[in-house]
Structures are given as structure tokens and as C-alpha cells.
Image 1: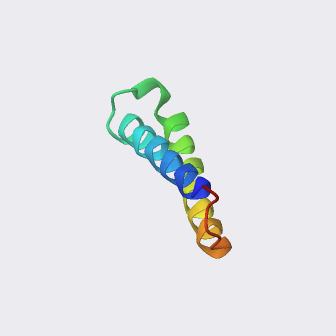
Image 2: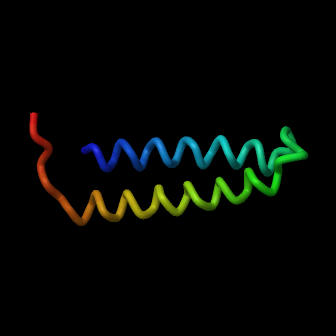
Length: 60
């Protein structure tokens, strides 16, 4: 469950970076925002895959 929470956090950060980078809001930092978007999108996908492969039940 922790891994899926991390995946959700990475996805939210990637969406924010996409809005800033592709939306033109931060025109001066657009290239940095695009790099951050790709980085966190990759981390999101990786953490989803790892979370699904582990498949353990979380401790309560």
C-alpha cells in the first residue's frame, strides 16, 4: 500500500510539472518542468509495477 501511495504522489507531481511545462505558465522554466514531468512519470510507472509485483498484504 505504501508503494501505491508513492505512485500516486509521483503521478500528482508529474501532472503539476506537465501543467507548468506544457501550459506555458512558467515559460522560463519550461524545459526543466518537462524534464521533471518525464522523471516523475517514470517513477510513477516504476512504483506501480513494483507495487503490483510485490503483491503483499499491508500490515495494519
